[in-house]
Length: 196
Image 1: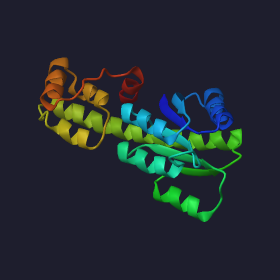
Image 2 (image 1 turned 135 degrees about the vertical axis):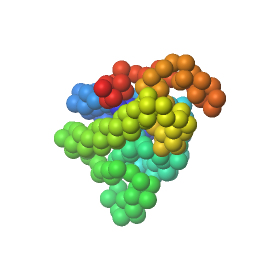
Image 3 (image 1 turned 90 degrees about the vertical axis):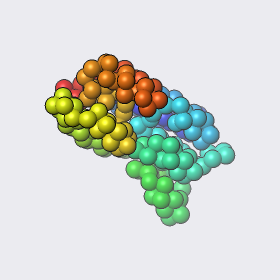
Image 4 (image 1 turned 90 degrees about the horizontal axis):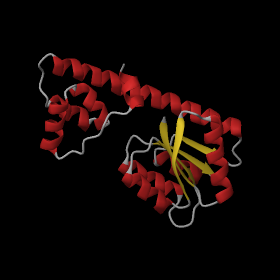
């Protein structure tokens, strides 16, 4: 499942978006739903998120400011901005912030599910690409290649849990993580299923 964070300071809109995801988008799991950009940034600092859905106009930090800061924290994050504003300057700001979709209110269930389906396809493709890279690394290590090849994979931003699969051996994995001061993470079932 892909992890979603929703940010909207209007509770009815936040509940509406949350309900669409829960009822129609089974591949997405809502990690949190917050009412400010500042609260969303705290979540993004604490955990990996696949998709951020945010209102453009919130008290304090705007959705565009949130998108810009979120991309600094998690460069591969996908972002959908929901806006009541059709003006070019807002859309231009969203494009500059690197958002995937800029959607005008009101957002229909059909439109939202279509957007989420498109983002799911992008995420699936990205994870399959990462899995293929990890599989190549796994073969490289199994054939006596250097454990240092893991550094390259980490620089590419791959999830550390996937590296556990590549290493295959808990002792090497523990040693690698300890030498680099990394927190060891168990591989999750859904991550493993991408690799098999």
